[in-house]
Length: 224
Image (cartoon, rainbow, N blue to C red; front, top):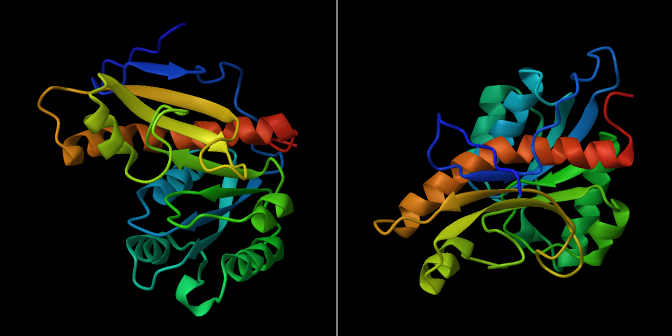
């Protein structure tokens, strides 16, 4: 498998597939409208906004939805000037009720793709069916290994020497949808959970915009 060696960051050993080498889509084409879901700090959300504004992804984050008041993602949205909506999961009596609210919100902004950028809730078939092949997730492991919660802790407990992150389409089985792109990160003997998680997250910021771009291309909705 070809490897992408990045001398600027020793934490990245392999990325596959490699970034497309063709010219960027025309800025006059239709930008991909993105809806983003986040529960925590929101660094992957900001990475998407930055990629769009720097032209590495021909798109625009039309709406951020958070499920926790005063979370970091909400504060980032205010700083970046991105519309944000709070849908507190505690105010919904079921996961389906929350997902219906998400569907309404993203349809109102005509989102082409919906990105789960640190959304710490399991979504239901209701949301998946509303955005078939258009619901994208980032996960901190080399899937199919270490699905579910605390993937970094799972990797350390298993004693693996290589971990990483994956961007994939969302399916009804948790973290089992089609993989779009992955990056591998070496696990060092001195790693704590926090140190390994921080190195993986740096690669998530690089990988997520590329994964979104590949998902859009597969649907024929980027640069049209």
